[in-house]
Image (cartoon, rainbow, N blue to C red):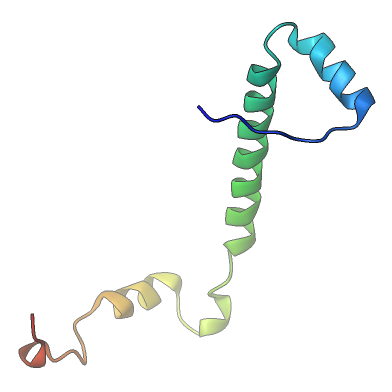
Length: 78
């Protein structure tokens, strides 16, 4: 665990402490986890449809990226 210092509006802090009782850190942890989960979901949803302008189905694009076509493994040095 790490300690962190944050600045909050006084009214928000008082209300949060009233709800959290003695464990304000648990309230902040829960709220931050929920916020981050929702932010990640929003980010993922924004990415849907990004490949629509490629002219191919997404599966075809991924298969092309995964194919060995055009790779010359004999010239690779390890």
